[in-house]
Length: 167
View: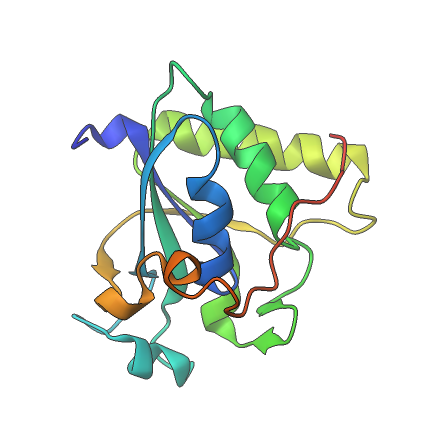
């Protein structure tokens, strides 16, 4: 699972709901929640919740490209969070809840741009996507209590669900 070509980092609001939906997707091998895109080293959840570390709550996604193409994985990502709101998902507000695709290779960046263009052209969301595409730098795993949170806490909070959109 250390093949960098088969891992991508996705941020789209509270990572609990994203992780659960992504982990249930056929072709996703493993997920881990944490933080990416910020300026503080070895950051923890409490620091990120302040909103001033620059990090986004992020899901590290290992996927099998023989079972799911990155294009399809990203289309699913755009169905399970609102990519048209800046720094917000549901009631969660702040830069830590922004929509970002952190790519690990140039091919992922190309595919991400193509999918964003496709989703925008479909007008399925009724507004342009604000999702940014950033080169992956570093990921800090969240504390163990946050990993697989909705499996451990089935009635826990999530503002994520799959929308029946066509793009």
